[in-house]
Length: 154
Image (cartoon, rainbow, N blue to C red; front, top):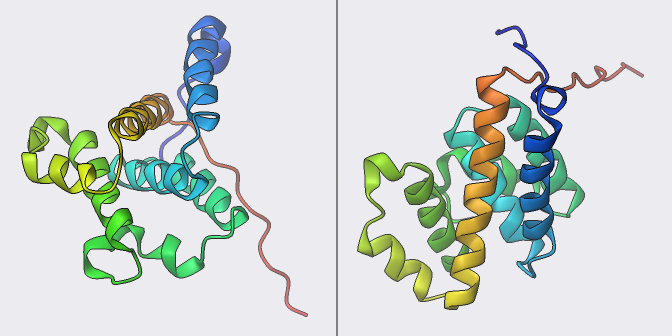
């Protein structure tokens, strides 16, 4: 386990406010809540951000998504729990998040285009960019997720 490096929100309140403003846009963009949850959780898994995986798995549960839907996100391509629209979105999240490796192939774009409008695709890609910024801040500066209280035996 790594030790936190410093609190980036306090180190540059101006930078934090700029990222928070982008996040506010994502939250009010009109994208369905489950798609925002999917984007945030999948990108955070790819980027190895424990802070964000913890946060977004809890948010997904709060938004009514099943434990199975959340737990299988790291191996989504192996599970039929995701519908065709979610699978297209997961492919896009993977491709955009790993842009240096993927170059975002036409197959990922075509799959996304089959289910979303150009406006939605733009908002989705902005949402992917936003969580990637948060992941880089949290991983880069070793933000520590809160530790839940252990369950007590009855």
